[in-house]
Length: 226
Image 1: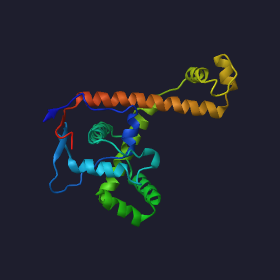
Image 2: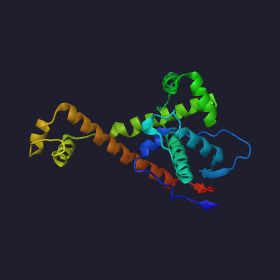
Image 3: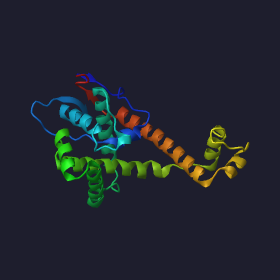
Image 4: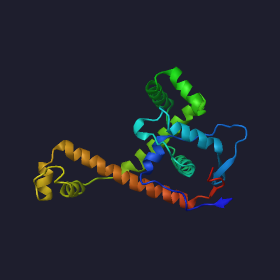
């Protein structure tokens, strides 16, 4: 058994880890412990399901993550579990059944209808109830990021001006001062840059949040390799 408190690998964009998919255990015979997080167990079956889910059509194409190593999947499961526990501390983060229904329906349509969805779930190893719980957990994490991180980030005009100054050649801008660049740039361009800078800061703060949770947790990797 190998103790691991600080060796969890955190990606450069933790938000993508959180929003891609969520690991829920489906009990199977001959399952085994692969890690514990503050005493809670992560099982081999969770790794199998997580890998299959990440590579399936149920995940939007821009969020699919094929080819992850076993250890990378374990780290994702650990990170997600810690963040779900953190989200549970805030009573205002409550996902109504209607939101879950809408998200499930959207995924069902993307999968090609109920029959195709059920077939993919059987291939992955998820029951409909487990799948619904995954959707609920994903919405919980999205809401946590919105309410506890993104809501506190402000992008100033000086931040936008600095970006414009740095990238003015690629943006084909002629101004040589911040005021000139802000005046020259179209409103749509300024909006896109503002959103880009905001998401960069969201990712930075989320990475810090995850690192803090990992450092404070009792994490033990029991079976890191195949």
